[in-house]
Image (cartoon, rainbow over all chains, first blue to last red; front, side, top):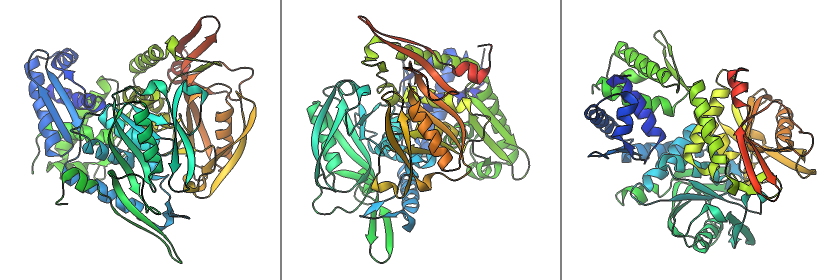
Length: 278
Length: 278
């Protein structure tokens, strides 16, 4: 079967998007479409040009016999700004107010359109870094971790709050839950993380930072390395925060006065990722 | 700006994949690319033909002034069979053996390549049905729910095992956990599910069926409708199972004799979705 360029471009785009940050060889595409490697190379430069034009990522082409292409999805500054503004607009809604300075976000972390943006934003932040695994803690961090992991094409691991028979042997640490000042325990299946692995921590909400701090301790127990920490939303800490260097997509205050109001604005993502002038 | 066909095809494919099961208007694409609607229509028939050829889904084009296109990703029978065979191969590994007839699957549900396949398989099963929301219970069902929800472009909701301040008001039910015969409680945030909503339940592992049964009770409490239930893996029930009509991608026995072995084979997915002759 010989496939025409227009059909190749459609299928190639789909295939590359399903295998981001993975070297797909010229040979693979050439056999898949019954086309010469030179034609495939031309196709790839069209794909490359298109992703750059729309600010959706970069296609790196590797020349030579064992060459191919790697698609790395990420946002241009303009697209990132638009995605952050969308998130702020979604969060900025007084009906999200919950007692105690908390904010209702469960609907957002279950919406595919929101998760696409959150995932691509986090992938953008770590685009130039060597990441082996994304880590989060159950429950509401999971969708954030999965969304980021899909765009980065790296596995994600879920830290549990209590023992589960279905995890096999685990390693656990104690941590201070910042918001309630209680000692809690978190644990991770022994076989999910290797020594020396480069780990990005993500979560849905940062308040005191106790949970993020606990995950950092866990990373040390596994002799792994922390690359960075990113949360969907950063609330107001009561007292000193237990982590610094955490990136947030959105900042939000929940004010518990007569008027229960939510005030959302961009977090420090744009400064952190695109530099000070933002 | 006028964009050439080859570039339009690449960007259009990316855009449609990020907005599956959504009507994207001819007008939108025509403005995005500075191209005539007639050219866009020709582009769309190329996209349509390509997805059909590779068995990756269907593009429905809606003619007329308010027309456009809807991309519905799903697997052809051949692709579904290949994806199921891949999953069986991954699960069929004695090192997954855990005491008590359980199977270690946490690594698989954290792998983007596996989740892409699981998500597209579940989307294939419900392709002709009216689904409003995907439901799962914490913790390990979440990645399955999210993967399916991304391909179906529907929200997913997470049933919790205990009360959480960040969920706001909730509705709860008691259920019998099939494997340990204990009465447990599960609950769902009141604002996540509307009366009359059509719900697909997914989970990672089916043993006794107590958890799935509990979610079904919860759906009734919300006056919502159950469309179907699908699990990644079905184990061996000790005694009578509490649900029937559950679809499984993989069936797996964990035999706890002298030799602790895992025996994985295809679940009932292919019969359920593509008919009896499988």
